[in-house]
Length: 250
Image (cartoon, rainbow, N blue to C red):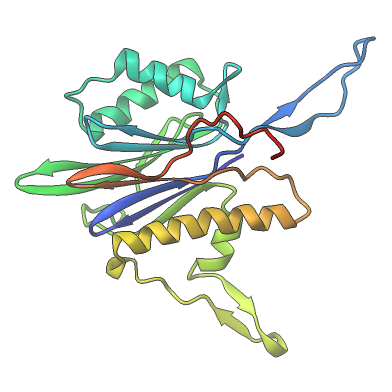
């Protein structure tokens, strides 16, 4: 499991993700009997956000992040090396990447948020997609259903129940004497890019810490990565680097 969040605002799109990679392990006894399945953390250094620099496109991955026994960044790298064309725009990359993953891992419970801008006339138009491999689903989420009208907001994937309870406008909390207290809305249309960055960090960190204290699998954790994509370009706000002393106790 993972947690990723995509915040799409008038002046930019922010991708945020944790770094924990977990796997469900199945074992057998020496005489061949199956042991109970259990979930374990395999890494706190998994990359789930990818930046296609030439096309100014961002991709975040959640759900099943070990494919063919290898971490998801390995599979994404192979796709980029073999099939990515520098002339592709966001529409091309979405279709190619889904074909690539669906052909090789048709049953994978792997999903993507894919974001970028496309020049239409003289205007940079934002595109935000949710893609799911096993369902072969491609859905643009930053427009009103059935129209091309751009909307702003946030979408998340993976362990999304924590942030949904906190901010979903349609959800209510129980206050004193059992009175319902509705969640107040967030004014996404009025939010700046810096506010979007702060929200993305908040969403990942809050999910991580809530999972830490609750009696549930610890499947969200590790460093937080943040990528910002704007019409003028993209850049990393936070991205974990290689270290030589990360395992040392001092």
